[in-house]
Length: 440
Image (cartoon, rainbow, N blue to C red; front, side):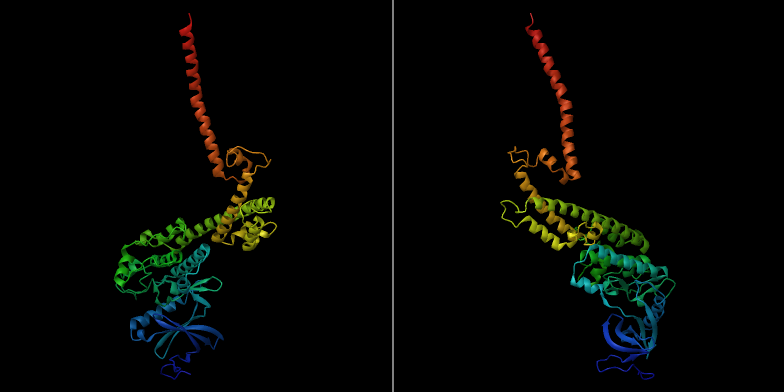
């Protein structure tokens, strides 16, 4: 039990046994403003997380007041993407917040490991951040410290925003101009100057996190704080590499990082709508890619069936064996009637890899067919790859190739219509002149 009027009873390692009605089980971590413990709520019979304000802030009345008032305001937020706050209190002069206990890890840890993730999953995390912030902004609460360390990813892929204890309430007069709070790497230019902030400041910070998600590095990197603040306030972040994000997605993120708040999205809902629209188009394009994979797979299956002995004279493994290797990598292709929607769930990079191997195999098999015409007779050199050769394999043509062929034929026709009449006219005129010359 905690001695009345004194500090909480502690273990030799400095960990308290109990805070209020919460029995401390273990220490989970330490942040800038507090230490977080796993604890048991003895009254409710559930596990919780208890964050205790560190001793560094105990003697600062303004910090204590901010922690208490604005954490209590954040406790009113009930949203699937915001950590739920159960209780707020003080034990032996130390403020504490009781929150739901989460199983997962901070986004910062995922980014640090650099594990590959599908673009759809990254955009889904962005949408969840904006959903949570939108709910907070609707209550007039601005987070002011959005960063990977304050975004917690659960095992099922859902996300929670943490640490609303340093948030600012729009109706509060507690934060005076000139007082800087937040993390410099992700804070907005106006926040870094100590100015008043609103929802657009959180949008900037969230966009900085989104940039990190896509590019694999922070948008502003500098060796010291003054240089970092200079970049945040005056310099644009480096472009995201082409392979890391489509241009449309990069434009959305960079607009969120605009220096002037008026040039950013004016609400999280507006940015959410843009990202949702991008995701719909991207997923539709992925489904078209899945359809293309199925079409190419059927074509390769047919060609491989005609050449069970493999690629003639190439010394490579039989085509049927290579097709089976692709099926082993993508078992959905083995189903009697694969569903493109289900295949699209494999995500774009994997589908693109499968399509690339199928196209390579089809080219090799198609090349064999061109070397030996179907009727076994010798064909002129223009047969392979020429117009007749292309017509023979019309099912494999793309729209672009047919448009090119049609354009060539049209150009030839126009040339003949322009040149032939003039040539005939000149010919007839020459004949007439000759007749007149030799006529008696």
